[in-house]
Image (cartoon, rainbow, N blue to C red; front, side):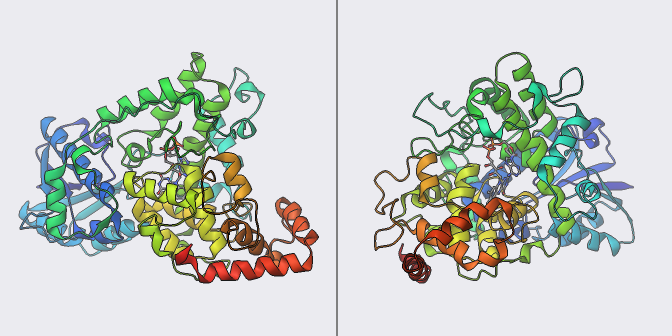
Length: 509
Ligand code: FAD
C-alpha cells in the first residue's frame, strides 16, 4: 500500500526528516494549481520563482532516489485544486495513507483538514521542521495579557536558544537591544554590495504561465530571474550576505536611497519563507560572524532580532488571531487603493521610487514597505483589507502568515494596537531625514498646506486630529498630540481642509 506525501510550494526543504530515507512505497506529490496562482493577484516574479523552485526541488528529490509525482500547471490531468488532485492521485496510486507538512497559511490548513476529515484512509499532518516556535507558543506566553510585546518574546527566545549570550547567560554587550544605534541615514558610502544572486532564464516557464491565463502584475524578468531557486543558491546568498553586507546592516537598517533599492538588507526572505534555508542556520551564521570579529554587535543583534524575534513573533500573532484578523479595521478606514499602486505613476517621489522598484523587482526593504508605502495608506485612510491584498501579491516573500500581521497589524494599526504600540506614521521630515527621496520631488517637504505641500504633512497631522481621542492616553504619542494642540485654530482648519482634499484626489497625487 502506498503513502502519498504532499509538498507545498513553500515547503522546499531538502533537510526535512521525510527525505532521510528512500522508500518506494512513498510517493511525493508537488502540484502547480490555479487555486494557488489565483487566490490573489501575484507579482509575475513571485509566480515564476515559486514554480521554478518547485520544479528544481522535484528534480532534486528524484536525483536523491525518491518517487515523485509532479503535476505541472498545463498537465491535462491537473484538476487545479489541491483536494481534486489529491482525490485523483490517491486513487491512481491506490494509496491508503496521506501525509502533509503543517501548512503556514490558515487557508490551506483549513482546506486540508477539511479534506482529510472526509477521507476513508489514514491522514496525518507532521511538523514542517522549520520554525523555532510552535504555532501556539506566543499565545501561551502572553495568555491573559493585553499587550503582546515583541521585545519580551524576543528576549525569551534569546535565552531559550542561547543566542548572543555571554558566559554568564547575559546579553552580549550588556544590552538586549541596539535599535538606537541602527537608525542612521546612508550618506552615500560605504558602497552597497554587488548583487550576488544567481540569474536564471525561465522564459519557457513564463510562456506556460501566460498561456494558462494566470493574471499577474509587475515585471516578470523571466530571462534573468534573480532569486535563489534551491538550497545551494540560498546558502551561497547567505554566505555572501554575512561576509560583505552584515557588517553595515545595522547602521543603515532604516535608511532608504534611490541609488540603491536594497542598501544592506539580506534579500533572504524568499529563501527563508520557502524553507530552502532554516532560520537557525541564518541566525547561527550571523552570530558566528560577530564571534569571529567580522561583524559588529549592533548589526548582528539588529539582524538576529528580525529573524529570531519578528519573524517568529508575527507567525504567533497570525495563528492566535486567524481567522478574522484579515478583516480587522480598528480605525474604520474605507478608501480604495490609489490606482497608481499598480503603475507607480505618482508625483510623490518617495512613493514613485518605492512602488516602481516593487513592480520591477518584487522587492522593497522593510522601511520602504513600512514608512513610505504603508505610512501613506494609513494616513490616507485606505481600507486595510485592500492594502493587505496588494502586499500579499506584490512581494517575492509574501505569504499570508507573515504578510498579514505586518500589514494589518504593524503597518495599518487595524488590530487596534495589539502588535504595534503606536501607529507607524510619519510626515515628510522623517522621509527626508532617512532618504534622498525628497530631492527633486514635485512637492515641498516643508509645507503643510498649499497646493504644492507634501501630502504626507497635512495627512499626518490630520490623522492625529481625526484619531485624537483614541490616542489621547498613549504615552508614546503625547508629544505629537501636544504639538498639534499648539497649532493655531486656523492652521488646524487649513490642515484638515487640505487633508480632506487630498483624500478626495488620491488618484491624482
Ligand atoms: P532583512 O532586512 O535582511 O531581514 C532579514 C530577515 O528577517 C528577512 O529575510 C525576514 O525573514 C526577517 N524579517 C525582517 N523583518 C521582518 C518582519 N517585520 N516580519 C517578519 N520577518 C521579518 N516579510 C515577509 O517575509 N513576507 C511578507 O509578505 C512581508 N510583508 C510585509 C508587509 C509590510 C507592510 C511590512 C511593513 C513588512 C513586511 N515584511 C514581510 C517584513 C519585512 O519587510 C521583510 O521580511 C523584509 O523586507 C525582507 O527583505 P530582506 O530579506 O532583505 O530582509
